[in-house]
Image (tube, rainbow over all chains, first blue to last red; front, side):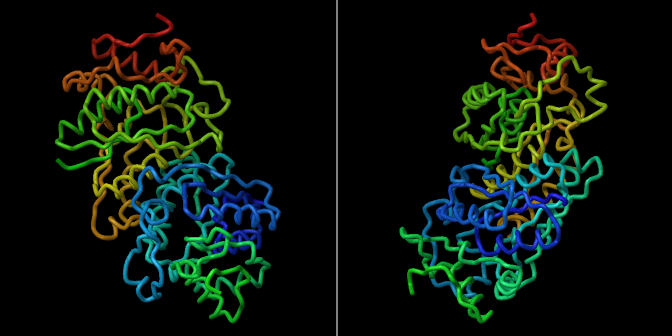
Length: 228
Length: 228
């Protein structure tokens, strides 16, 4: 099997992405990040998901984006509630973390080069993407080009590929696809502002996108919500 | 004054780069990295250099590249001695750290976006560059393009610029230029394999490039070497 680095946040999208990498015949090396995020509970979810799919190599890279501040996910800005999808589409929300996916992919690239693979899987999505600039196709193409000139492997001919199999899917499609290939969504976590007992808040934009996706797919989200 | 993020390792090149940013009228925000490098003594050098130039904002981002291994600077590979410049030019040495400058610039980009500036200074060099692929002009251009599509600021029109004022200079030229604009090279540090007493080894490729540069510039390197 060909190894591939799979970025695994513990959220719904990354779990489906991991399952798709397996379906395509890759041997996943999972990479998660402990970057001072509020929703660190998602790291536990990442471990559960990796175990459920019998991933043999799961690495957690620690770093501290809080040194930069500037985002509701890492600083002191309050996570906003009750954005409608239309409102979300009209701007880049405060939950945007500056250059986050650039940093994540840079780490994935380092790991890919060390283990000698060319494939990186990333669960970003351009439809329900909440307005993040680093969740767009042009970002992926720019990163692939960078990888080809930035690394020893690239200079020696490796063509790095960033796979974003969810890029053009709706949240409902992602949930349908994940259900079809055996993802247990009970193991996943999406909330930006979880309760002390682990329940999802149900109000942040991530919860809203998830709940709307399950509704549209005609399925019930198995995780617990504080607003139920 | 316009702020600019200046990557400051504490080495000779980054000290000259910081001085050049000041000469060009920028207000530097220095950014250093604590990434598990053997030569952590260079972080103390970075602090000395920042203080000497009265930098008001100096941040140290911690992360652990050792999770990846794969380089003499971060893993268990022995730092090679007595490379000739010709040997160095013929390949990418084991001191290459996979995707290091990509990760460093990603952090610099995050900080630049948070503080609202478009300029990043980086002391890389394409002549004496030891064969690192991420010390080449095509790497810088690829990163600038990535920055323009990866960030909120880029999407809103900021044109990020990675300044590499040393890119085409020889080590001797860098030393001459630094001397002319007031860099105290005694504060800087370059060795990959320092002795317990802080002396530079004099044998690693970084020491050799530095010593040859001072010789060619007709100047004396003020730091201590173990081989003297």
